[in-house]
Image (cartoon, rainbow, N blue to C red; front, side, top):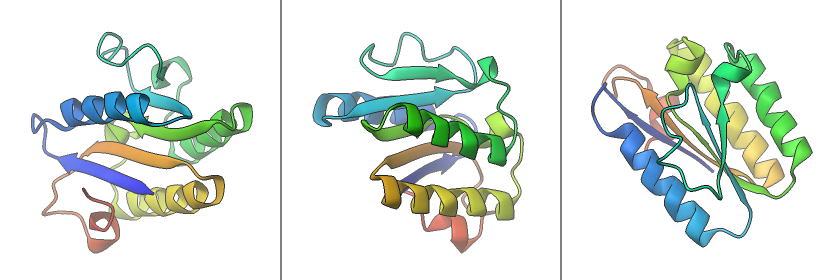
Length: 137
């Protein structure tokens, strides 16, 4: 399952994502991973969730992110939920085709490996097409 939290800057996306991470840590029996661009959530995310800083790995493209997520899963089959904060800022690509293709890949990967994904992205809900809106929560 892929859930997308989208909105304009300052709309509370990260706050909502943090609450969902806390809920996942409390309710799920597997490992919970949160990927963020910088070190902004260090004190907000429960210590039981694995917090990964994308800036430490120079994640800059959707292909790199796919490989990174695949590698995380290969190293830990117990991951049940991956949260990604500020996806388009992290990857600096707001192109509808690229975002939609990445979300579709996550859906296929998640279904195959039994991993849920929740992503926040600074996107204008009125400006994205239906391929992206179908993942919005």
